Image (cartoon, rainbow, N blue to C red; front, side, top):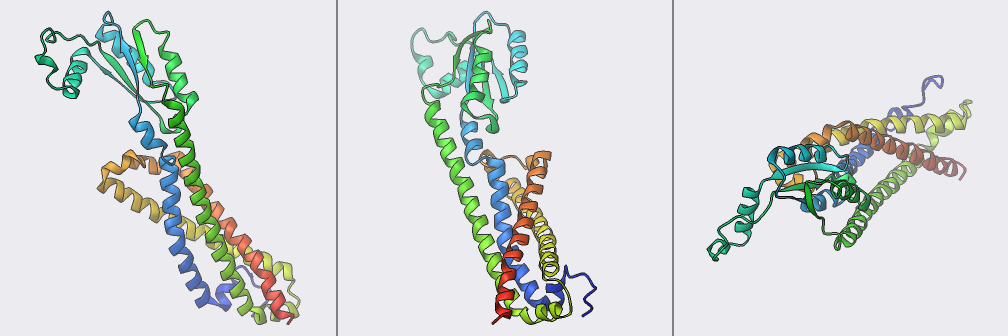
Length: 297
């Protein structure tokens, strides 16, 4: 071996088969890790599901015209915390009431529609917090067209508490997977370094600095991490895209397909790739002392 050559890929040149097998094992772990990352990222833990089941209802005054109601609905939909706002006139409101309570129409005096129109407002899952909901309620209450705002304020604190707890639990679960993956990588590096102790000693005897070997191996590990993490992330995104298309009901809990390829998801995916590259590099550096200690025996 010519020691003036780059040492970045020294593991692949000297132990190519072992490095390939270990890389395959790392990818097998990285794929579910990337899948879990995307699922937690899009769903916000359970925030997307909870926000899809929750709605703020703005009951309109009887004097509100349809044009005014539609104009107000558009303004509400433009609020940062609002995912959607839908106006339902008194006819639709009455039909929904009859579906919920069949037989009411047969009661004497119930033939006339007593219900006003309303606006149903859904909150964005990433704004599904006490402050996010409060901004919507505060914007509705002063409006003259709005007679009453129904937001279930009594049950909201408990709902937000459950949301925070489950979100923290999902993040903790992901952190445990990352830690387990790091332990596996470090163990692999230790075993590989011990097996290559003689090769490293050969280089050191010919004047190659120990720090250069360690830094070069860490750089090579980081590059491998970038490649494997990127492939795993793309594969996980393709699998999740397929599942969301095959089972549309999953979008209620995870999110729509198009959000997989949004700029925010791309930025988060880049952070995931860099995190894995860092884990690879650190595990390489931590495994290096094993080679030196084995060589001193």
